[in-house]
Length: 266
Image (cartoon, rainbow, N blue to C red; front, side):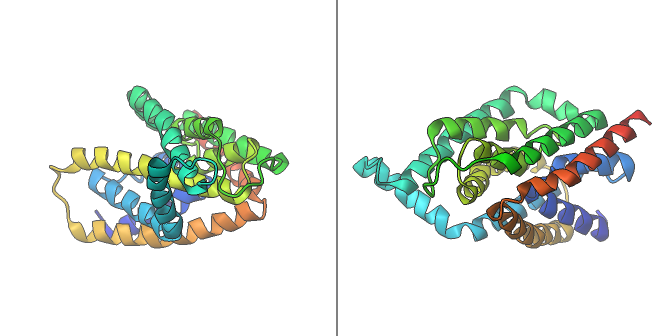
């Protein structure tokens, strides 16, 4: 694959994986409007691993604390005082509906990647969800506290985000905010919840890509670029969430969604 095209796809992946504008939706739009084909499986795996590494770097302390808290919870069963352990359980619980939706509706969802109409409508839905966060009230002020019902609902939102045009970060953070999770916790839960989802999807893609022949230089370059851009995009989004400005991204998703819908009519 051409180096410039690889860098372009890596930048798109790094930006749109974390900013609430839908990475899959943008790839479908670029494929139809600019005739930029989706990357091969090996490069897709590399780009996802790059953005996954960005999450790990940003949340490295939290990840270690959650792992430790989970094992302490198992050993001591100290549910009330073990915030990290409860957070770990919430991630496990939230991952179940995501995995179920992905496995059951995988074939149907993959067909949606051929439809600009679906992308256009989905981006408008994303814009509406982001816009509603302007009116979200923080009912739960305890840092790190995500209830099990909240975890299930956010996990469902993450599963639905497989639809191209539905932003994963936008839907999960919006869902958390609308159900009373405080801003920083909603963002932290969203991105930590994405780790098993990205890992699972990457393992499936890697299995299918194992037999492919590939020039490894652009693959490595793509992973590095997606990591660097993803790290900056994640830091930027966290600032928007902390300041209660997530709704501003609705003003991007809405016109892009309408543009995709218009392009689908041509």
